[in-house]
Amino acid sequence: MRRTGILIRARRRPLRALAAAASVFAAVVAWTLVAGPAAAATAAGGDCALPRTSAHHSEGVDTWNAAFPRPSTVLDAVMIFLSFPDAVPDLTPEEVAADHFPATSLFYDRASYGRFQLRSHPVDRWIPMPRASTDYRIRRDWDADQRAAYLRDAIDAADPAVDFSAYDLVYLVADPDAPGVDADATKVVNLGTPMRADGTDLRRLVTVFEQHPPDHNVLAHETGHVFDLPDLYSRPAAGSDADWDTRVGDWDLMGSQFGLAPEPFAWHKWKFGWLEDHQVQCVSQHGTSWHELTPLETAGGTKLIVVRTGRRTALAIEARSATGNDAGLCREGVLLYEVRSNRESGEGPVTVLDGHPATSACQDGSAYPPLADAPLGAGESYAYDAGPGPRDGRLPLRGRLLGRQGQRGIAPWRRTGEYRGCPERGSKPPPSGRSRCSRWPARPPPGRRPPTPRRRRPGPARCARRRAPRCPRASRTGPRGGRAASSPRRPARCGP
Ligand SMILES: [Zn+2]
Image (tube, rainbow, N blue to C red; front, top):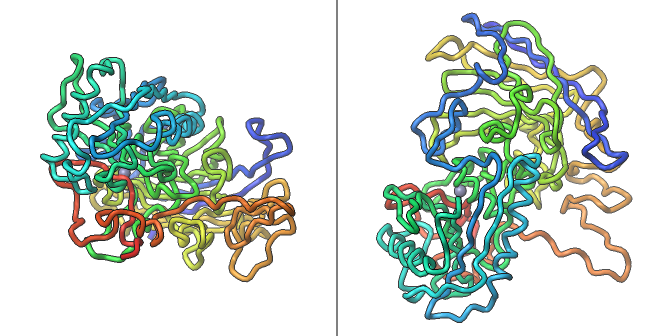
């Protein structure tokens, strides 16, 4: 067996984009790639750009699927607020719009380094639907005919007030307090046959049924589907108690909507065109090559290293820091993940590799604590094996991350003296008490109320307030009546 080695080093490097005195560690990764068949020369993305396949929301990046709007410059989204005869809205359209904007626009502005602007255009009044909310039997796996009736009624009702030809995205936002509204039904509906309005084909509609306030980042997640991103969580079989977040955990908004590190993977930024060619380095030559990674959350520098491991598979490497959209992440460091462009949305197109398989972290905040400490710090290593030999186009690749002597653990991944990661069980809280780790409760100044905890996944208490269909039912098996990308709910965790 020929072997591949990776060395990772870290050094302190000031970044102008961060606040004064803040600095992060840039990772320097060296590959010693020893492949069986001669590999092509290193190119800017070219040899590592996995082909887009027929898989729904394929992770292929060689071409853009023109059926989806590409978030490259500016897109305009209309928000239509729907009321129903069986409920008088408790909230104003402005209050409901504020649940999602400007937060969603700011998320994409940060993630795209200012390259992409999502402009929201909320209609300033409730649009009355012709039928009671309960008539549509709204639920996660919605009957196709009922859903089609809802969409048709919504577009017809809004048409006098909305010029659909002026918008790239349509959010249909239901009155959160209407009795038939089920938050589990929030999703993007991709229409096999477009609906026509104002001379425009409407190919996909975002149906929003969120409570007030909504799930964290839920609209950013659904909007990611509009931009052809797949679900990265896995949906266990009906009746199973299996975890939904085993594949990517907190990482990327298309995993859990409660993830601590929702910044889109560098792979997704590459797909969108938010990274320049020189920011993606493809390793496809024999020998050793060195790469300096700058944190994904800040502009400039190399963001992604890719090693092609097969015709439709690649190993991706990026650096993550507790900045911007990732301000709440659990563990900084170099993150490794596998990408498969032939996997369907929700079927494992991305798998994060756990740099610390024996430990978990951020037990009380992470969507999936075993992967919360997945990134590698300086001085740590990871053995990667992409397969036993040439087979179906795969390279015989073995990887290993080797640390610099004398450096261990995540200590180098500290910043400005503040501990950025989360502690192992039994350790002492920092003197400042300012850690985000929920195991170390924040110590507010005397006389001030403690901060309200960030709302997490639906727990039993929330489920108890929900109508029965929102909690687990064995009938939840899969989308019906066509492809609909759903928000990552976890009914298995809800109470009975
Ligand atoms: Zn989804």
